[in-house]
Image (cartoon, rainbow, N blue to C red; front, top):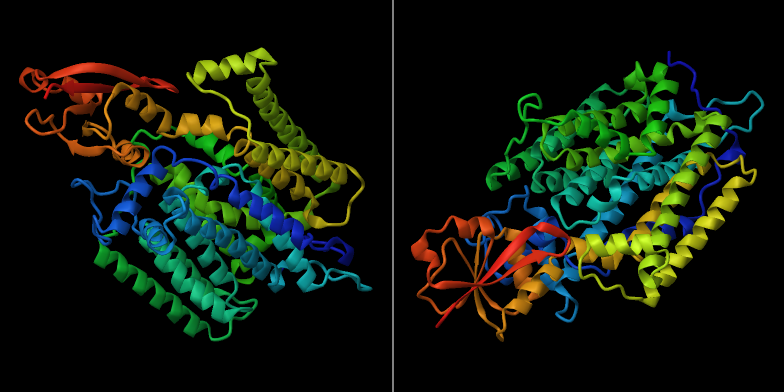
Length: 565
């Protein structure tokens, strides 16, 4: 017999968040970070280079390589998406913006799939609140909708979601695929056709994004869910298990054909894992959502020991456990941990009907102060670099970003101002005595995270672009090369740097492992490390014209050398 539910929810507590507010919040979150910036180092620029090469037919779509170098990032699907976008979209749109369009859609799919997954989980019998003796308890549909609203707010509140969900990389593909699989297993009862499609697409996308092992483990969890679950009984459970096994087989075959079975596990005790760094990552990455999830594990602990009757807990816990394992046993801990965020958000949502009023108020005040202080800091620094007052922030920016010239753009300023006004309205609403809606405790964290992200991507975007893109460094290099469309050899540069020179210049570029003193290229750009490794005979024909330092990193230099014709 299942123990009684810890959720006690009245009908007046499950009013849904107005759809226009949710749509506006999600749209602002998706657009900010994708629009108005250059490709950043190094993930964005490297991916962009391979996408352009695929679209132009300069490399294979199945085994891409440029200058004999294959991509360091796992997977292929992210490159295919960008290349397809470049081929399909009109030429008048900036190429770097075109490749971001499918990734904007992927982030939207991530948010939508998470909402529907949590909604489906909240509809399960084990997730329902206690029935009142004289009626008045929340209806299943309204309860599920309110819980799903809270879960989506919890996902948006996660600090670690913002940056990597706005990259044109395999990480966002894997995240959206995880959410598709999350939804597919949760919705087998209510939306069988959509769930079946999402299962196959999610498994394939996860595999093609370079994580076939994770896809197999997620699929195995779904198969166990089909065969093991008791309440609610899954119709045609053996057919569902067969479908999941077929999806796993298709994904596994695709991984084998494309050579994607690359195990990246490490021994954290031997590979130099920094445990303090991992602990800090676990603390802040899913903050402020993970305390809600931990509270769920405590308040629903009696249900957790009966997972076959409480899949609304067991399925998110399984995904969280897999991502946590990957975080510990892979090099890219943050890119593994981001896959846990949808499941952490789902668990956090089930904390909402069990929160005590005092605990909810404490969380509200802590997050209110944290995000308000963060927003004030962003505004003060922006005002300082625009006006010179107060002087200290502007001086710090000038010291850290040598040569940065601030500019004022009206549109980003208006967006930032409107976002700040919306924050004040949210704070005013929350500080009144609104006790009804169960998602209210996650409104401030989600709004605060969205505010901070919007302010960074509007007011601070010129500074971030200056520090994170290659454009300022390449502009300095161009000043040292006094020639129109020169032929330039590149030696010792990373793939991202080579692609950046191709994107930001119209030069004739040639990547070399050693300088060619006989060819037509009279200019050479090299790293100090690569140049110092050359013998005296190779360097003799070349004259050092300039040593160009990246404006935001004093230890990053490029040598500009010239050879007389």
